[in-house]
Length: 283
Ligand code: GUN
Image (cartoon, rainbow, N blue to C red; front, side):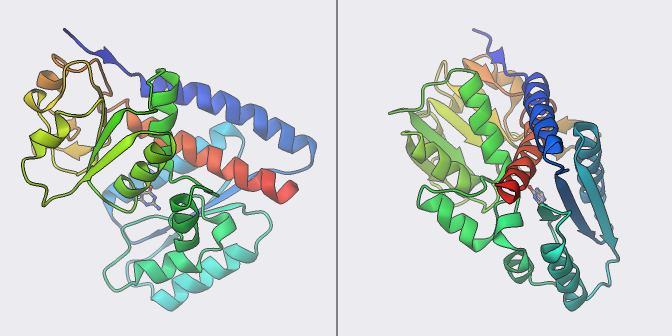
């Protein structure tokens, strides 16, 4: 068997088309949704992500403001910028690109973002709202994964969902969203014993560890839906996910490629969250 390839690029294009319609509706009320992206330091991967986020905003008719700050910025200076953005009525969403330089307290910076502008969904109030089943913002990557599963018609009620990787950005919020959709959720972490025994039970397997090849075909239940959140640059320059694609596609029923799978969805859902914030500000 060879798995169906889930085309994240095509799906993200249809999400962006929806976004364009909502941008028009807001324009009719005199509102242009605005996203501020704050980048501190020179991390090369972050530079690329921030550029892509700003370009996606421009293309969709959102206003974007990129604020670049040097590696030696103090935490107090960054907090000042965040507080100014909290007060700025042209800005509906604020995203501080992670990771921050080592001398910053990341949690404190995120808690300083106004929760109603926290389009990443990382603020502790938003994490709590998600956990209690009343999310204000769903973190973009797990939100994108849910849209993919929905558009693929993957049944989630009563399904066995296994997540590998328990980060605050992906694994934990992913678990909450799948649980809310009625799946039985197993959240694995780097200490999990016999990972294959867990992953082989999965009807839906989401892998988000940053470790290339951590899941291979023999760890997948035949016919399972495999969502690969990883993006890893190998020493030879190739971009690969966390799942060994060649062996996995022989076993899975459907699988996301890297690149062209989850990545484009993450950016599309950032636009959706920014639109939601702008729509709430108009209500
Ligand atoms: N760094 C890697 N992924 C993300 C993300 O989704 N949001 C932010 N703010 N930083 C990141």
